[in-house]
Image (cartoon, rainbow over all chains, first blue to last red; front, top):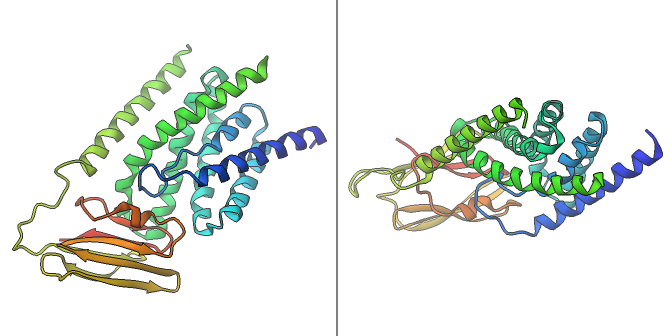
Amino acid sequence: MKTRRLAELSMLTAAALIIFIVELRFPDIIPVPGVKLGLANIITVYAVYRFSGREVFLMVLTRVIMGAIFSTNFSALIYSFAGAMCCLGGMLLLRKIIPVKYIWLCSIIGAMLHNTGQMAVAVIALRSFAVTVYYPVLIVAGCIAGAFTGICAQLILKRDIK
Amino acid sequence: MPDRVKIIIVVVAVIFIGAAAATFVLFGPGSEPDKGKDEPLYVEIVRDGRVIEKLDLNSEKDRTFRIEDERGWNEVTIKDGRISITDADCPDHTCVKTGELRSEYVPIVCLPHKLMIRFAE
């Protein structure tokens, strides 16, 4: 990896972590496990359209692990890991189909995949399908949050192109 | 706008509307269990997928008790025939913020302690 690439990725990872830590201070909007705005995803969506799959994967992995360390919430690690990997995998496939102009759409689907990954882990962890009643709420929240972060990423990219 | 993007937008919109409708059915009015005051109203406390306690809310007295294991504790309160988790030592406190158990379909969940409270038959 070129030094320049490495520096760029490190900067983005640091920015994502700062956003993540700031967001921890936000009060819960609705008391459903797994619902949050996920502002750090602005960086992920942006990176998906700018870097190679391997580079984004390393970036997201670092953010998830360091996020767990900084928030000291290790029981949430497995959920954020599963969610982040589903989201990233889906978005890496979608970037070939969805042009950068419609990055908000990619972000919405990414958010829904994130919630799907979390839900799968919750079903395994609780050994019960009863939690799946929260799935529709997660999808609705994911669409809204994904649209918001996607539009943010779009604004960044627009500035980047100039 | 390319056709494939249009198709994806339609699919996402359908999923969104479907999920919103499902949310309304599961959480909205009419989701409370339809039981009279004299009928038993059972709730069960489930940990790791196994029922550890079964209570009848219509005959339970108001009380507060703790459910504890090596992962931590949750303080459960029964008041006026309603059950809620009022305190816990988990990091997210989502179970406390959920409030009282209302919907027949939606359990109170504490993910860190793998604990669930829900209505039972």
